[in-house]
Length: 212
Ligand SMILES: N[C@@H](CCC(=O)N[C@@H](CS)C(=O)NCC(=O)O)C(=O)O
Image (tube, rainbow, N blue to C red; front, side, top):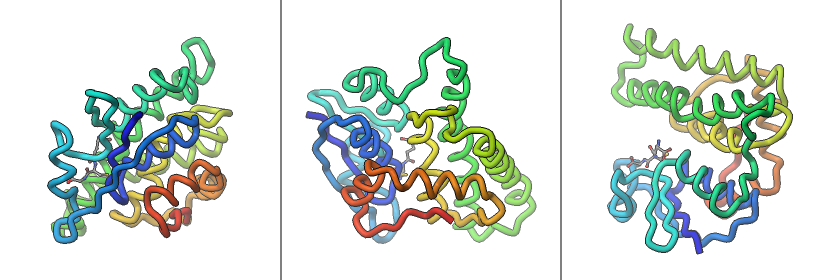
């Protein structure tokens, strides 16, 4: 059986959520963040070559990276569910948002987070590079004004990739989304999904989803 090595308050939520959505059985191996650094504990770093969350194990396979794990689980156990097939009008949007989450949005937010941690949030560099996050959130708001889900009309793995930066990451790098009504509507809707509710109960019990 698949084992999801879950680091609390982390991107490994995505893998629990995926398995809950498509009904793939899994075993959960939970790790708490290091209370001093806030990073992963040594027990988590030892699991994989790069040491970040998420990590799964499946027999002898040890696999890291959210997007790689999601593709692996969907293609190995999920019969391609929650993806959009080539040829569909939503195919390119699916690919874009699936990759935008960790290819552009997370790096931009990590930069903001780092600047904040270093006490440099008022610097010219932080302001200049912070524009990337602003652009990303404007694009998200525009997309959610034209489509119900990131890929289009159907909930897909692109939504699973996108939700972490739009919710949990804002606990690390706070962001005002009061001027993003489409995003707020989307979040209020998506966090009602039973599989998402179960993900929080299992992965981060007691944590309220950040929807405003
Ligand atoms: N691109 C990677 C990012 C992984 C990542 O940075 N994970 C964070 C948790 S959200 C982590 O492991 N942080 C703890 C640390 O670096 O010690 C992925 O999606 O798997």
